[in-house]
Image (tube, rainbow, N blue to C red; front, side):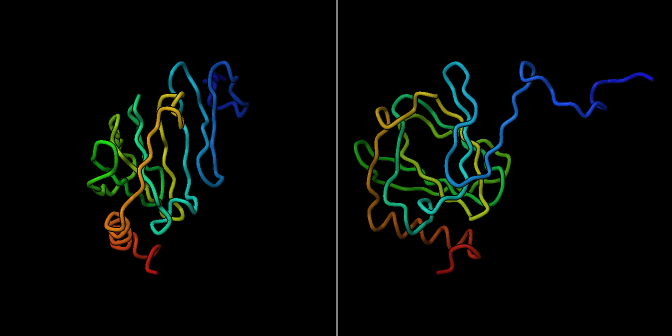
Length: 155
């Protein structure tokens, strides 16, 4: 009988393949290679629409988001030293969203939401800026989240 390997239920050697998953709450890096890392971010209370107080931007890298499940909204902003304009992008599952270097951003996820994040592995507080959101930005986040995820954020 000819065997192709996939019929064998044994685990694949880690020299050939690494497999990772994260089902916990929040952000978890899972794979590092050379200058990049891959992480998963699942829903966490801090990214509820009513709790977002700041946006961030990375001075040295782009950051890629891919919606894996649930619903997600990226909020992208402009402004030199602080956030000025804020623009929502409703995410579609399986689409790649590349947030460019120096662009203010934040994400809102539904309670069952999960995103894959790819970024430089040295992305950290030392090369990231933070800006508080203004009341008008806060209201925009609430309005868009209620419109796009009404079952999640009716209150």
